[in-house]
Length: 188
Length: 181
Length: 209
Image (cartoon, rainbow over all chains, first blue to last red; front, side, top):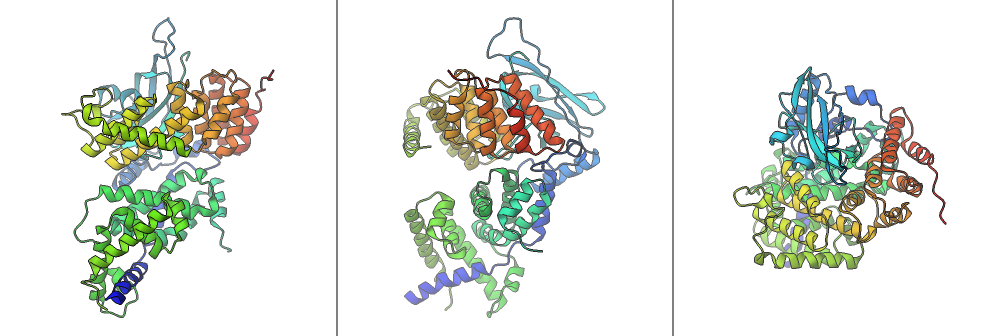
């Protein structure tokens, strides 16, 4: 019986080692995503703005990634920019106050766009997050944002999260969210 | 064309040659794909976890401290992905490797029997606690030493030995009925 | 982080979990677990409250923990991932406080935790804090710029650049324009490491007396 016991593990290991591996087609799927990410090292501003980008909602939602790729292909590349115009809340300078910040995004085929961050608890459904379409695919909103380092994302059509290509990108090791970072200064 | 070391390929990718990353993917896909497959019990989840690990590794590539040991670094990312993927998915009563797998692998036995045996193994593996399964796969299927396993998981060697031992005991227990000598 | 620091942290968290039963009615920062609007499962809520409790006891910014958990919910991540993320953040905040000192501001601590997450060491943080002129200046912007550059330049290269600029008493505004200049030069084809180094050296350190 003990011989048989030893053989069990050997046979298990043998079977496991001989399982058919993951097929090579997976490589191309990985590279499709990789090509849509910012390159390491050199960056070219023009190619970043015009090249279709794959963005992820969650790391494991391939259906949504495909939808995102279609979105960008149809919109001939979504150009996004953030225009930060802060107006002082009042004449009295207070150290840790909130500033009015205007976010602007160009997303031609979107039906709704929201900006989310710690200033609105990443709430895609909250009214404060919703941006207004100004025509020509331009969306804007002005929201109070706390002074200091701020992380934010744009959410298109309640499903597609995207970072701002013109702002520094935040690498999210925890949830894979595409985020950008800006620093709001008191005297902006 | 000579084959470059992992470190050399990483250097290229960091220099801006994104396409070079495909070589790393091709090189490590098989081994880590098997690990993910055995950790998660089904091909779909395994492919997702593996793809996700590769893309995360690409994004954080600048932070790989020892590019020549890219594999070990990627493994750590993959092991974490498997942990969270495993808890997210509902445990299936029967998990199975696809029929092609049974046909492709060398076997003297009747293909149907081999497929059934594989199914039993997968089911038994999924009965193990995740950390026991992980330790068992690393030790016996990937043939890693305990020191390396300790480095990859951050767990002490004696704890790892205990996990492997318990995994073997449990596998024997679960599989002795169906195992044919 | 030292073994001792880790043990302290583990003990505080364990104590927090043990006393949970006696302090369930905790309104602050628990909107994710409020009855009627529960966004996290019970096990995750338990862990979440424990981490918040630890943060409070250790005088670490609880809003950072909350914000991280909210991001986890917004990204539809599962309980274990959220718990892992907030535990990691707690550890990084604690390590940041060890490195920057007890009087470090919440904003400095949060930026320092991000820096640790991006690959800086606690020793790096201590070195940067010691280099700052004046000593009491905020490190939030320099550390945020550090993290942004570290996406393209190896951390071990960008630390000395930021240290140099701290010694030169570079203002927050100038740190930000430095970051923009570095990005612009990289976009034109410059080597990130060389550009970051060259532009940082345009500032002159204040001589020590």
